[in-house]
Amino acid sequence: MEDSIKQALIFIFSGAGATILGFCLTMLWSWCDNLAKSKLVLKALTHDLLINRDTLINNLDSLNQELEIIQNDRYIVKPLNLLNQDFLNFLYINLPKKFKKEPNLLSEIRDLSRLSKESNETILSRENYRISNTAMSNYQNRMKIYDEILQRQENELLDLVEIFLKK
Image (cartoon, rainbow, N blue to C red; front, side, top):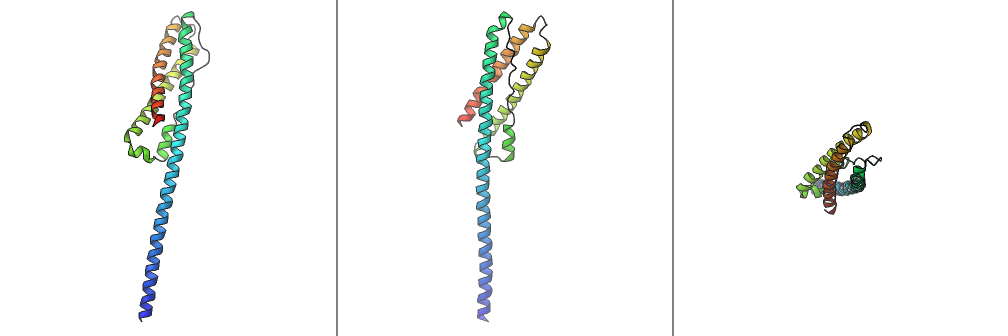
């Protein structure tokens, strides 16, 4: 009888041990998977912000050129490029621990997203005006106003992107 009790205890403890080992391995795998996803999300976020930084620099170059020549009734024909706004969606997929540890980062990235959207709306409005109203008597003044607004918006965004990329 003692042998059967010993065998039963061995089976119980073996089963419990296997269950605990399986649980620990599952938790370890989940932790490693989340870490890998977080790294991918941060890499994609950084990539999108680098693309936006380049777009902002190109747009600012065009705006600065146009503001220099606009008084002579000359304009830049090339339209400004829109900013990528998908970067916030990466965070909704899997919020990296970096954002959980520093809650201000999430607020800052949301501000970047909002300002990018505002800038895109201004770019679209400027482009619609530029194409449709060249014969207007106040065209030069309106384009100058658009350019100055965009210059301010895009400089602010560029500063925020640069600060965020350093984090």
